[in-house]
Length: 152
Image: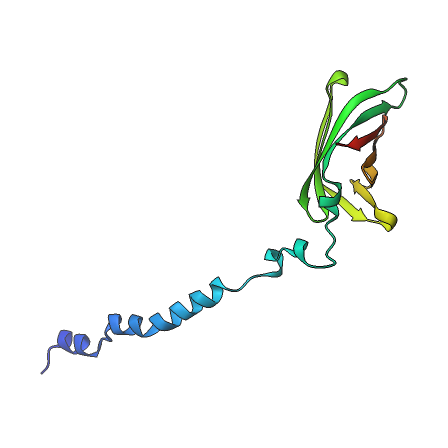
């Protein structure tokens, strides 16, 4: 009678040969995956006719703010940094009035005649960029802040 341990060893497939037989398929799959891209990876900023509203409005704007209920204006700088082709991050800084706001992912849309609309939080932040000029309104229940400025 044959030894049961020796029968199992004889019928056991050779694992090295098994794995090596799949190696060409594995290499081919890795190559295909390496050269495939998703639409999210595509950079359409260079393609003809592609709108990049955020790049058009990005920059540093120097101007002033007026605050509801107060007279006069306060020197202020607003910086718009491109986040995506249709959104910007905004820094609103007025050191003399101790006003500093930092907002992310503000929507930018191109309108007619080269006028861009900026808006966020159900129009709590709303503004327009026309040429090098930015007009921006920040509203709250206690009042509003109106910024007007020009891009450097």
